[in-house]
Image 1 (tube, one colour):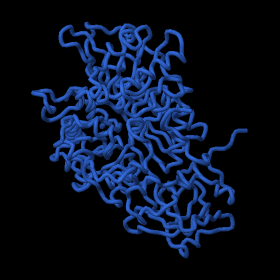
Image 2 (cartoon, one colour; image 1 turned 90 degrees about the vertical axis):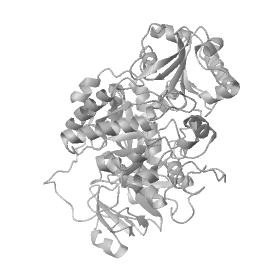
Image 3 (tube, one colour; image 1 turned 45 degrees about the vertical axis):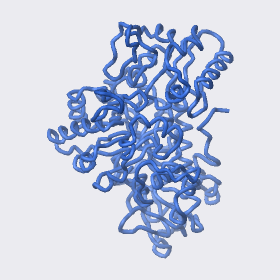
Image 4 (cartoon, one colour; image 1 turned 60 degrees about the vertical axis):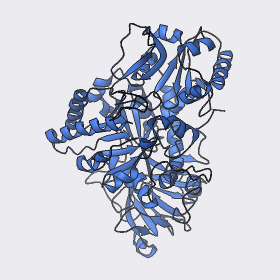
Length: 582
């Protein structure tokens, strides 16, 4: 006989005592009325006590498990509100090309392509990641089909850039996708073209490269499940208890459901269905939005959101700006939906209770998106759904108070708000004046808005502690370079961003995000007091010891709680996800 379900409802039998007490800790609750505690008591996945050691004793019964934290730091679980384990790991598990260098030179890219072709003989696709434009500029070369044809003319080649805004393809790939000079640009992207002939140059911008993916075999569910499994494993081992996986299709939802059914979905996931084919084809989009998405619903998985690329990225100058790009007379970038399209869509999704997550890197894109939400609020009133401005790379100062006024989430991603060769080189195209207001956490928070963070892996590291430290410093975490990228915020503000604000963005603020009686026991125990030393070169080294989601022990680094009869889903060191696969 199968194991019984054990869901709670209004008249479920309630126990008297705690199932588990975590005692003798330095517990940061994120509850303004009770900011610090020494112990927590958990029953049926919820917190029934958050108090001093003496006060928690009343919850101890004959069958209560007790674990002594020995002074360890405990806090609410972390929230990563924008990431893509599937995009990062599926190519690895599909045995696709992985250059394995953050900013490869053209010569390194050429060597990787040839080495992959030698180890994978035949005439099949060479598909993989990554390349970056600025290393081509530095080498005096032009990326595109001509360069790729000189490296590999006889097999189709398709390579994504580091920011997932451009795909470089050769002539064979264009031929197989049926793309030539007569092919119209899709509304949600475009082909860079030869100025004289109008022929595509082999650089596919934004949604245009979904046409290449449509010509390739789809990623198998088994590969996607493995990618999500390893992503969830890593996130749990780094203290993430809730995350948004943005851009999903029916195959990705099936992979997540299988993971959920197996008991290995150890993070609360909001999966956002692609509104249009920005990256890959979504063949059951309208069925999913009509109601099929509810088939995948559980306590750990919701697909009640849509995601789309409203504008592009910095390197191809496709971010949509309010004023022309540097060194351009009139080019402001490109919107991938007309203002009328996005307004009608936001109003409709808002009325249906579906969250809209709009990729907005340019200040012009976020301006139009906020206008669309304002119209939805005018027609519908506040529906209870907080829509999300994804990336929020550049925001017009006049829009900072609108996030609070319209109840919109300002999500900042990727987590690359500190100087590195890649971050500085890739974003230099915005110009120095715009860079001064990049990733304006401080401005949104000062205006009373809800700011959250997303790693946006694989564009930046998936490690949330790196993101947390650099929110506070806005400096490189691995050296002493005084250079700073934008305005830092305080540790207390950053902890709010990555915990309770994340819960608001998930629509779960009444259930999680802080350690309060009645909320779910979504909490972590770490190896250091975050307040004990300056953030720089300290916070990103944090190691997570224990992670709980809904009171379930999902990660136990040293198998410590086996002594009281609790075995975690994941144990040991976090898996190594970044860099080349071994």
